[in-house]
Length: 344
Image (cartoon, rainbow, N blue to C red; front, side, top):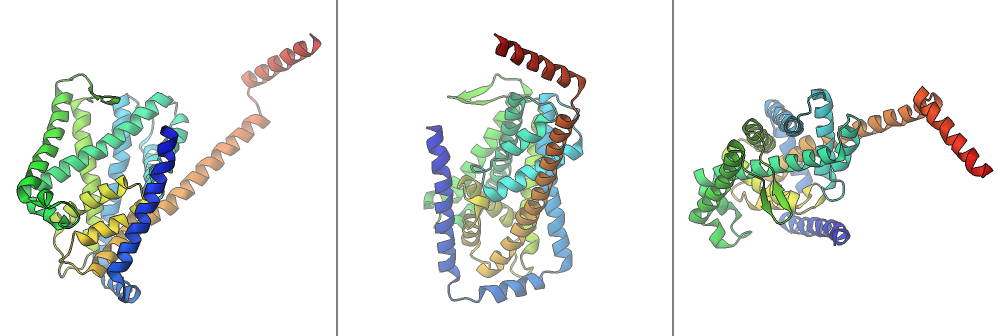
């Protein structure tokens, strides 16, 4: 069954990309997309580009915080912030672009953290806790948005059933989301036993860890939404709160779709959820988001991976060329055993 899903999820992701791109083509058919986007990119003031860059740095700093939180939970303190930041940055840059099922990021973390002495079990817990942190952020920020402004879900009218976009239903969903976050906090404070549903299990961390999870996840989502907010034109800009609401929903669905980088899915949902803004203006802002949050980090991450693997390869060659005394003794013992086996 596991092998079946490993094959099916990439197919689903590819289908989501193809369908979304087709619908986007229908949306912009007949319009001069290229010239308009280029004009919009040039029209963004330099200071708003600077704010978008700062928002990107805040989002990736929060992602590095995810890993640091998990390491603190495991009681591991000997790994430097620099190593954690590079590992986290590389992991998310690759996973966000290539897709979680194809290149989940767990592989990058495994290779990196094994060099620091972590066991496979510890790395599994670290990866799981990072995913849980993001999920808590979606519940916290999304719940807060729906409780404060339940009409925000009405932006998804036509994409969701009408009863879900009703303000009363939206606010109810918001309270349920915040209730789940509160339950997690209570479990942490009172050190409740693990929460289980079948094979699914949540271990409650210490209260200080839980608070850091809430802060880190919220910072990442706010930073990601900030990139798009600053890239939108000031005239007709709906404001940060609506952009944040649409970003949380669209980004979460894009990740869940398993489409590589959420390509097409993210754009389609975002454009449909912001009907008051010109679609080409939204598309321009989303291209800035992809450049700052996805493409440039991917280019840097690939360099980091190549340098890391090159260094590990050089270390392996050096060890073979200049074995340690312990390795020499092991090789001699192995040779003697082979000679004895041949003689017998």
